[in-house]
Image (cartoon, rainbow, N blue to C red; front, top):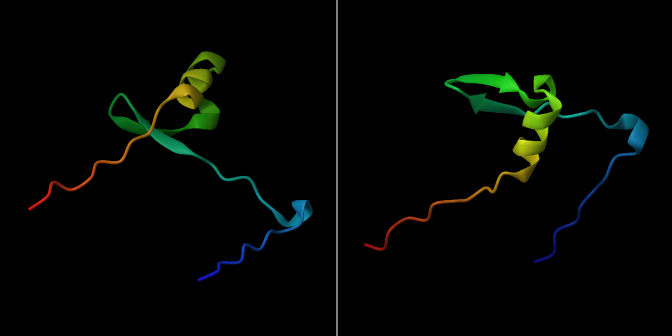
Length: 53
């Protein structure tokens, strides 16, 4: 099975705002100071798999 990926021209694209949970509340990453933004970029993401039955 093949999947095709369509891309939009640069002028039709819009920036995606990323929100994250910090200290118990949600906040956009764009409002973080430079140090906190750098820390956010360095985070490692994981996914937890289901335990075998």
